[in-house]
Structure formats: structure tokens, C-alpha cells
Amino acid sequence: MRKYLLLFLALACASTSDAALKGTHRFITGPFQSGPEVTKACAGCHEKLTNQITQTVHWNWGKKQSINGKTVDYGKKNALGNSFCLAVPSNLPGCTACHAGYGWQDGSFDFTKTENIDCLVCHETSGSYKKFPLGAGHPVYPGEHKEYPAGKVWEPVDLVAAAQSISRPSRAACGNCHFYSGGGDNYKHGDLDSNLGNPTAEFDVHMGGKGLTCESCHKAANHDVKGEAISVSPGSGPRAMGCTDCHKGDIHKIAILNKHMRRVACQTCHIPTYAKGSPTVLSWDWSAAGKDQKPEEPKKAAEKLYDKARGELVLGKDLVPTYIWYDGTVERVFMGDKIDPGKVVRLSAPRGERTDPQSRIFPFKVMKAKQPYDTENGTVAVPNIIGPADSESAYSAKYDWNKAIAAGMKAAGLPYSGKFGWIETTTVWSLNHMVVPKEKALRCQNCHGEKGRIDWKGLGYDKDPRG
Image (cartoon, rainbow, N blue to C red):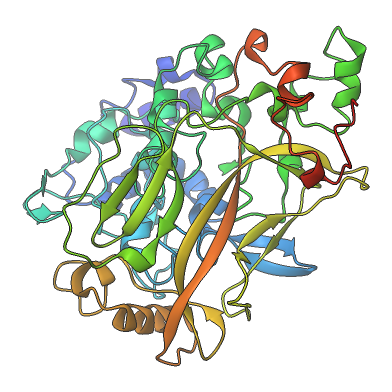
């Protein structure tokens, strides 16, 4: 009888809405001592789905793509510094707190072992399921006592309650990782913050006004979610998905606006500012770390924040984007590439130019940083930043850059001369969320004229093309 009940539920789940799904898994009673035990229970009905997940970018943190004129297996797992925690290979137990799996703490992780998949991180709706920051994807389990940072106790999760609450992924579920990436709410992207969990229409016309979820645009086929960040999937470009997937044809009543769409991205006019809710990081000076100074928290726009283990950050709010020609491809600096320390190193740079008919003007967030490099080998350093208090190499534990870089470069399989210095870098982040109602979109005078926001010369024009 139980077998037929499970079969019925599996078939029902394939077609029902998220509201209808809630409460359908009350038959799961455990007990469970770990996340992988929950996954084994899920696989009792959904074995095919677990096999699908092992083929996805969310699971592998990389895919084959064309970058800098060559095909590479590239993604979050081996992307060179994004200026936030600098690199994944040297900080796996911390970074993989946002991996859809359990136990990825070093190169021995088995990506074919389906019980390592974390179903709950995307599908639970109890609101109590939290991964431990240094747990390599594991939460705190019953009977464990864990603190991070020292003095902050993380309570064990109720795995049965989490398993019984499963539904389709919510905005909050996606946001647990994507809102808080880079160390804080909206720190990294600039257009993804916790306000999107339940936004007003003015804050985001799609999620607030129309009630769309992340899945509405980022549709999944065989659990592979559509859409990529140019920081880790620069070979895909914005056309992997776009506004015109829904808004087709000449959608404006004014002909000149439809003409603009040939060279101006929808986001340029419809996302006039970013970081509208929570402030975003604009610069990060790692060279300032290590000082015995009381940690600060930002209270207003463009305020500095200092943390001994992270250095000095500058955050901003309600910001005008940087406008750049973009043809859908990005130039990247890879781990081990030789760099010129005398120049600002552009770790990611959108390609495009005015004379290219495939290029359009897009809005971006430009992130500046000061980070370490190997002075002898001329390569960007990959330090071990994150670790427990008793770590022998993590900068957050020992405040020793040489030890942190040596351990990190070893983890990444890169040589290190033992000598380091500091370089200035930039990374670029595309802006696609926090779309305003059409009444709030930019008008002609916002870009053109003496008070226009566009740097026309920077875009290759002699002057404002409107005259």
C-alpha cells in the first residue's frame, strides 16, 4: 500500500502547483541524523531526478563554454577571484555552504554520489533549515554543538520538519544563497537582495507587481536552471535568456523607443538605479586587513565598513549603473594567467563596441578591489581566507598572508614563489533585477542633454548623438 501511495504522490508532484505541493510529504517521518539520509529518502521516489541534478551547473559549479577564444570547463569552482572571497578552491568548506550538496570540502568530493545532493536547500519551506557557514554544505545536526563566529551558537536543524515541508523553490529559497552571496545582503550582485523575497511593485515590477518567482524566468529543464552570471559563465552571455523571451516585437507605442532597442538593452532604461534596498559593495581593500579595529556595519550609502579578517569595504545604495557596450561575450583572467601589476587588472570585462551591430548598451555594476598577487610569477593569488579558529593557514585565523596564499595556491594547484604584493582589480556584474514600473523608466532627458547620465565619449561617441 505504501508503495502505491508514494507512486501517487510522485505523479501528483509532477504537475501540481507549489501551494498544492505543501503538506503532501507528511508521510516522511525519519528519523534522520544527516542530510544525506534525507536525500536517500527523496530518492526512493525521485531517483531519476537525483541523476538529473548531477548533470547541472548548480551541482558541478562549471560547464564547458567558450571564453577568450577557447573551450574550457569553467565556472564558480575555478573562477579567478571575484574580489569578495577571492576564489573557491582555496575556501571550499565556506564557499560550499551555498552548494546544493553535502561534503564538498576538498578535491576528493564525489560528484557521482547522489546522496551528496541537498534536496532541502532548494525545496524546504519550513524556514528553519540553515547550512553551517564552515560545514561544507552540511547544517548543524542533532547532538552537535557549533559556533560561528565564536560565541554565536548554531542550533541543530529539524530534518523531519524540513523534509515534510518541501515544495517548489521559492524566492526565499533561491535568495538564501543568491541574496547573501559575497558576505552579506546584496553585497555581490547589487540587484539581488532580501527585499525581493516579498517586494512591492515599485521595487520590482515582476516579482512584486506580477507575483513572478525566480522560476518564472529561470526555468529549469531536467533540473538545469536557465540563466547564468557573466562572472562565472561568461561564455553564455545575456541571450541565454532575456526580456524579449516574454516581451516580443515592437512593444512600445513610440517608434523611436523600438528603434532604440536595436542598440540599447531593455535593462538600461528599466533599471534606472541598483542597490535600491540593501547597500552593495563597490570596493574591497584586502590590504587593509589585519588591524585590531572594532568591526563596523554600514548605516548609510557609501559608508565604509571594516573587518579585521576582510579589510576595508565601501558600500553604496541607490546607484546609477555604469553603461558599457556588450556583445554577449566576456573576457576573463584565468587562474595562472600572467598579469601586468602596473595596470588595473580587469578580471572580467564585457566585450563590445559601438561599431559592432551585435553590441548593445547594458547597465553594469563595476566592483573595484585591492588584492594579493605573486610578485615573482606575476599571477593573481588565490589565498585561503575562510577557516575555523584553529586553522593553520586561513587568514581569518592567523592573519598571515604568506601562509594563507601558500595554502590557497596549493589547493588550487598553482605555484607560489613565497613573495606577494598588491594589485588593483575590477570585476563587472550585470544588472537584470529590480525592474521598475514603466512609468518610472528613464526618459530621454535622463540620458541625453547636459544633465544626462551617459558618458557618451566613454561609449565611443564624439558627443551626445542627439546633438
